[in-house]
Length: 256
Image (cartoon, rainbow, N blue to C red; front, side, top):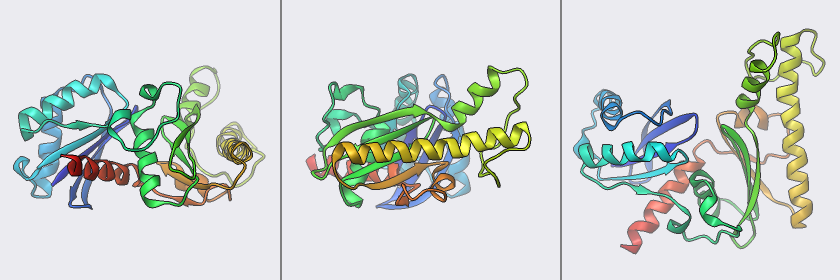
């Protein structure tokens, strides 16, 4: 079995694959100080529920945007699985990255670009609804051209409520009306329809700059919620990063 780990700024997801079929996945809050032993306790309890042993794991591939967590995950793999994990970075993929400094791109954005190259028509844009909302552009030749980084939706809600005295915490959901009749409804409208406006404006400007149509894939926890209200998104793929990690893993094994 292959253990795939996606470390985001907010959550860390563990998934177990048998060949290319996802068998199980689990999520926990990302804490950069969590020790390898703490990770091991968490995983051991989950593994026991589905009858997986440490010895069943034959390799580990990791996408991480939290450098401080990498040390503990490396020790987890060394101590409990007896494997050196493979970390994705700009030099470990076979796609061209057309940036001023390719090393500064987040691993998650690289992995998504690899997945798009393997599974979708090009040119394409990936909208990833994570801690930040990112737009990643892949041209018709499969080259990663760059993108856009905007504040994440939940991050925007937290910023709004923490810097104002009377604004409440809200759930992120599609409101019945654009015009809110109370504070919570008005905030929900702003967070929902405001970001629909952001999505549509950025996608239209990307198309204009590229001079062509693009296929738009949305991923991340809020992708389905926002995709239902805009034609700017062509499809939703919640497993995009896993598909990319599998592709990178297969290519790495071919090169060995």
